[in-house]
Image (cartoon, rainbow, N blue to C red; front, top):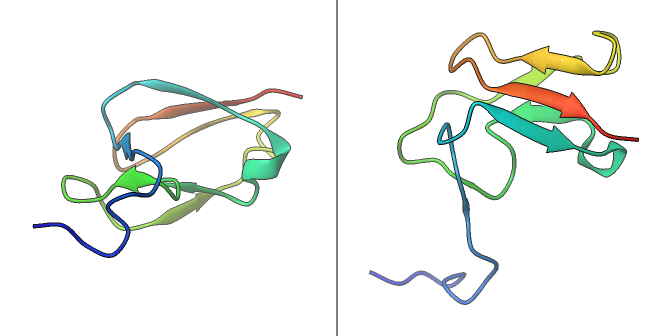
Length: 69
């Protein structure tokens, strides 16, 4: 079934990769990120990537995020 946003940008598969590179425009960082398909995901959590030295791992799914400057 198509929704009103079916012509929007393609969704990023949530939890499909183990490592994601993000930039400062993605802050505040949440997992799953906006634009990820949520059907197979978990509750949204915010990750303190800046406070963690530029790398954070989601406690729910194990996705590893690396901040690119």
